[in-house]
Image (spheres, rainbow, N blue to C red):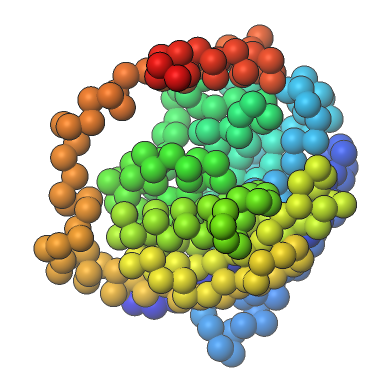
Length: 328
């Protein structure tokens, strides 16, 4: 497939307070998915749709225990299966909104999880590697000794090799670099990125990081951000600004800053990306990477947490430990 279109879909929904409330968010996301694929069909062949972080459920409770009791669900389950069925019906690929996941294999863990689904079913499951500390009390795969799954899956599909990472993960260039080294051509960002680090200067981290990760990895980026108004997701306001970026960092399409539902459609020139990766001698950063130089990055830095330490106070202590290692 030489060219197709991606849709970054913003949502503006209240945060559910319990599991029963997730169903309404799932229903609205599926409606928006159909609008993106069917509504744009006369103009664009939308084959990939990306939803934001916490589009189904957000961490509205301050402790892991409350989240597990009131909001966490198993994956796969009814909500992810609903996206799977719609992807099959519409013949598209969907990076689902994230939710709070429990997994019987890890009884003391709680994950912020999104799935890539396609016509053939669930293709990958991604659990946020870098919770937004100290406030997010989910588990990172980094916290689990001998974690058995691939923490950074890259999925081969008919629309290219797809990799995903969630929100704060993108502030760590190692995350997207690892996916690119594993072959990712389209880097997907699901995000709940709040003001003031949004889509407008002087603190437009959202835009800067999306473009930088595309440039440094010679990869396309599809980035969907929360569009919740302040009342739907306090205490923060949400700038939206969802976008599609090409492999040279050009913004191909973007939502205007500000809250609200949006469907942002832009092209993914897969054949052009592959030709440029093969052709370039200069600015081929992945090919020029001198991995042996970066010895400091191989040392442990932020300490893993066990089940008793997944709270704000413990995370604040571990931040101080990490800063001490840095000499800060």
